[in-house]
Amino acid sequence: DAGVIQSPRHEVTEMGQEVTLRCKPISGHNSLFWYRQTMMRGLELLIYFNNNVPIDDSGMPEDRFSAKMPNASFSTLKIQPSEPRDSAVYFCASRRQANTEAFFGQGTRLTVV
Amino acid sequence: SQQGEEDPQALSIQEGENATMNCSYKTSINNLQWYRQNSGRGLVHLILIRSNEREKHSGRLRVTLDTSKKSSSLLITASRAADTASYFCATDVLSGGGADGLTFGKGTHLIIQP
Image (cartoon, rainbow over all chains, first blue to last red):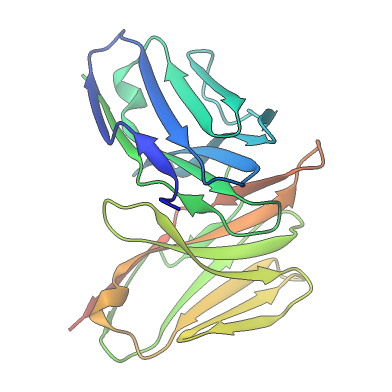
């Protein structure tokens, strides 16, 4: 398996634009997590899904952020409109089931100018 | 919100020495996990310790868990330059929906001096 695949690896966009980050979890994994990492706030859990259903989105910063998981092999995190303070590295992770290890993608480095 | 908090924030030691990092958390957990992150890369799982376990070993890694103190420690023995990385603890808790979330601390940045 190729592991968790995220795209794009880098994204530079102008303030106000819509940004879509993509994630392909490992086949057979039923949990998917989205995290945001910054120097100031560390690694924040934004939202996670179990069997494609959002379980807890309390970490989503505000209404500008939305996440979907239309099927077991694909998830998106959308920011609309983007702001400079959204600049961060966004990670997707998946795992087979509860109480097991999570596997991380390489991340998407987002810069909003 | 962040559940775990690592201590120290940064640690610099000589190659060959042992490195100890600590993690404290706030609420009851199912398990606690340690991850490593090299600069510019994703996190990699190191070891998982369940709430009913007190100690676990994996190669040069030793993890302890004290649920009464809500704390864990990660010991890396005989450190190598390649161990230079950030180390994170993550807690697996039960959410209201019955499913589990995995939340991380801010990490300890470990530097091994050759």
